[in-house]
View 1 (tube, rainbow, N blue to C red):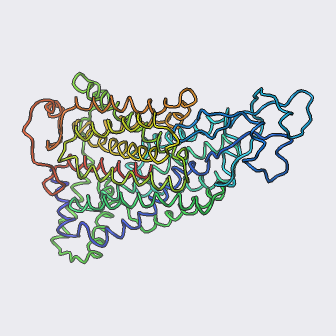
View 2: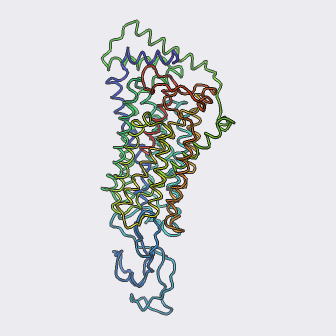
View 3: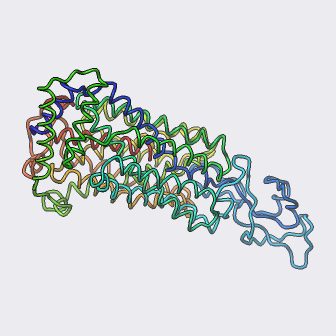
Amino acid sequence: MSAKVMDLDYILDKIVGGGGLWQWKKAMWLTPQYLAGGLPLLLHLFTAYTPPHRCFIEGCDIGTDLQFDTSFLAFSIPSDDSSSTFLRESMGYDECSMYQRLNGSSLVCSKDQFSKEPSSCSKFVYDRSEFPATITTELDLVCDQVQRRHFMGSVMMMGLTLGSLLGGPIGDKIGRKKAMFIGITVAVPCVFLGGFTTNYELYIVLRLLACTTIVFSWISAHNFQIEYFSKSYRRVALTLNNLTSHIIGFTLPLLAYYFRHWSTLHVVVAVTSSLAIPTYFVIPESYRWLATNGRWQEAETILKEMAHTNGKVISEKDAQAIRTALQTISQEAKAAKEVQLTVYDMFGSHFYRKTLILMGLWISGILSYYALALNVDGLAGDIFVNYVVTTLADIPAHLSVFLLVDSLGRRKCMASSFIGLGISCLLMAFVPKQNSTLILLLYLVGKYCASFGISMCWLVTSELYPTNLRSQAVGTCSMVARIFGMTSSFISELAVIWSPLPMLVMGVPSILAGVSSLLLPETTGKALPETLEEAMELDYPMKVMPNLVLDESMSESEEECVGLLDSMEVHESIG
């Protein structure tokens, strides 16, 4: 461990307090940031909900209070036993066509007025029992326009990708606090204005801006958690924060349950998210960032405030130690000229096999996870209950990472999670859709395995590459996977070709990815590679070290690996 990190962590633990009242108060003030970052992300699952629908039958549908399920459907709309959803039984009728009226017939609503020749709908009637109106019903984003609705899921993934690319560098450049504030002050107005436009293109632009900028808040809030606490408290703080993020995730269906009009829900989510804006005035900038960027005097003030709040008395000797450590960090950061490896090195002669295997795992995991998450409204039953129940599947997945990875090993955990994901998808492909309970159970198993698998991707990727390439490797794999993930919202449409096809598209690659993961080196108990040579040695038999724990003996690189995993858990639990 470098003297710089050791000195600062020593100061936190022994002088000012690394996990006292000051840290927990600041962590509490970060909670609204996760609320503001989580609510807008999957907002379109409710605001763009697609209810059961049918053609408007002229002469039969009369008045403004139209009944969705009526007796004349038997002779005016074709039956349809095939299903356009891969998770539930067919509605029993064609949602996108009607029987043509006989030539010269009147608009009388009787069986003898209709032929058996189907034609496309020009107008729709929606089942409004769940939601009085959604952006889908406002713009008729169904049938031949359904791709426009699915594109909203792709826009979400585009935003996550752009936000991930921009959020980190912006936070490093202008500071965590300013980046977080920019993210919220852009996202909240975009969500608010989205509730007042029925222009599809403008709605898409607002969604893209919101999904991009909320990532700024995630990254900055996570960096605050990492940098406020000392190493001995960091894992506990991030674990509790991860669970808090999951609990916050239940806020969206609660708001959607009480505010069911899409426009009203947009406004309520924007107002709720705006609660994060005042935290700008109570959350201080990261003292580590300040010191690294030459503002060590401001960092010193924050550390002294921290000591006072934590009940620590600072002697003159302690004050000098703080000042010296901060000045050293500032000087070392200014003088650092370390040579960096590039993304191209991931595809060098030694790494390319591992890189291709890992990218296959990342793509399978992200694509399957979001294909399931974005189609939760396709499950039979109440959408609010389904959303809550399926969100719960992520909690044991993240806990499994902490409980199983050291005892079973990385390869076994990764292989079993992806193979389990693939098997559950294959079973869902052929289980009769009227068996909704079994479908839900398999869905939960699949989502659990996908979430567990993605966690393993973050961990194993960070352990296979050297320090100078680690962040780039994780970022590149994540970016490539999210680009493929943009198609996840369209996977359900493959059921139009063949009902089991969507699950086969997810299941078969997941099993192949799981099997291929067994070809990766086992990294359990091995030190993180610092150099290119050490990374190459992972392919050869090595003496396995005791299981690594987050304590004062952990190297800076090992701590970085833990930080990457915890960052993923926060982001994926929200997204």
